[in-house]
Image 1 (spheres, rainbow, N blue to C red):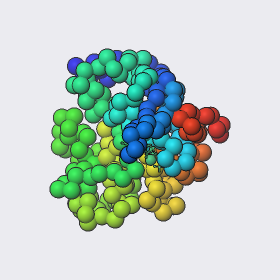
Image 2 (image 1 turned 90 degrees about the vertical axis):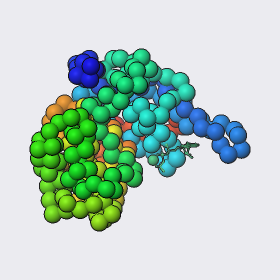
Image 3 (image 1 turned 90 degrees about the horizontal axis):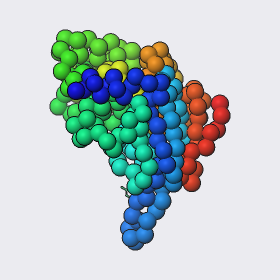
Length: 239
Ligand SMILES: Nc1ncnc2c1ncn2[C@@H]1O[C@H](COP(=O)(O)OP(=O)(O)OP(=O)(O)O)[C@@H](O)[C@H]1O
Ligand SMILES: [Mg+2]
């Protein structure tokens, strides 16, 4: 079943499409605050889209909706042309574990597991062998500059090192779509640039797609399209 969903959802060149997405949150005084207002977005194979916008404009909310972690009030989310609302909970969870990679603003690692185990977790969850999972994870940890930290637990790592483990974890299962929210915000300029190159190459070379939310204009400009989220809608900023 899982393989069927994967093929069915990613046999087309458009990976993801959001149509007319709206979302409002209740404010403490009970009024509704409209964050997203009829927003559209599409993501093609091998495409990297960056989303910029002021703090509080709704970027993380948008990413959570696209990743099916939060329901919109209205609008449709299509994965490979298939409306996500027609998928069962089990299909959504297969889609997430097989086809999506996540790097969040403050990524959470499993505290009782080593950097290597954390990075290998998506593959282990998919049922791949320990040998294969650890070998892929080790290679990625090397690429993000953590080959000497693979046995460390998250609490023994710095903030930037934890974020690099999260990046290795997001890429380890070669997901069709990577969602990244300020992926390199906690890194120094040089490490950030190297890791951005790694992420972008990994996505582009294999026809995958990536949505990057960032305040870093240099990173935003490395995408294929840069979009500005403002007043609940996306505007093409050109590159
Ligand atoms: N669960 C919630 N309940 C009420 N309001 C919320 C909730 N989640 C987000 N918001 C509001 O929605 C707005 C958008 O939040 P979001 O986290 O998407 O912003 P952002 O663009 O990612 O900001 P930043 O750049 O600071 O990360 C904020 O004003 C926030 O207060
Ligand atoms: Mg945010």
